[in-house]
Each structure stands twice: as C-alpha cells, then as structure tokens.
Length: 68
Image 1 (spheres, rainbow, N blue to C red):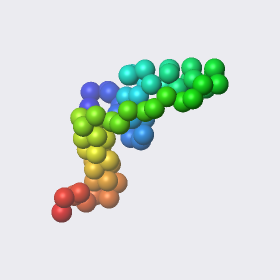
Image 2: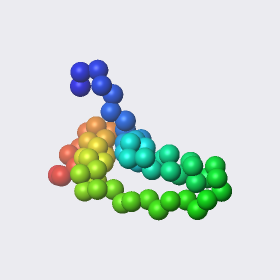
Image 3: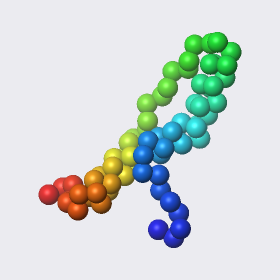
Image 4: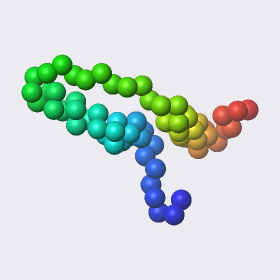
C-alpha cells in the first residue's frame, strides 16, 4: 500500500463529487437560498471502483471470498 490510506467509507464518493465541483455548487446554492443543483449519476468507472472497495472490505472483515 506504500503509505497511502484508502478511505473505507462513502468518502470515495464524496471526494469524487467535490473534485468535479458539485460540493462547491451545492454550498453556494444553500448559502444563497437557491434550489440545490441536480447531482449527476456516478460514472461507470466510479461505480466499479466503489463496488470493488466494498467487496474488498467484505472479504477483509469476514475472511470469506465475495465470489464463493
């Protein structure tokens, strides 16, 4: 893992939306009493990344293979 810590929660999804600027738009709308912006669905690569993260967490927590 070389010293990098991977978030094991919804933080991965939060970071994605922050990185694409959604969080900033959301807080701007809330601060200015505007309707909250629509949130785009996660792209396929992010769905795959989150899915693999949760499968890995399952295996580490249960000592079972997700695919058995």
